[in-house]
Length: 97
Image 1: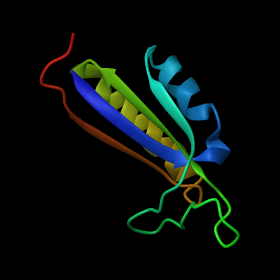
Image 2: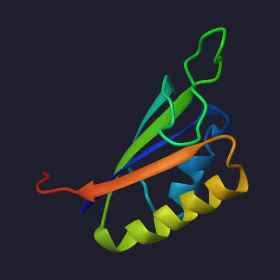
Image 3: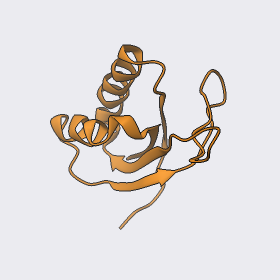
């Protein structure tokens, strides 16, 4: 099992959740209106006068064999609109119940 954390510009709204659903991912936790700043080329999303946009984030846990398809779909979304910003990170889950 893998955990995937996805941070993305709020302009994507439900598109990321819809993409996960299309790939068979049913369970996730979503946070809306969170602040952040990309580490490479992204502009800050801080919800203030200078940087008014905000981010959303999703955390999901999926079978190992689905990770590559999920990350490929998210990368394609990011490449279509790189100015918005979307990043996903996957890691091993040691235990769950």
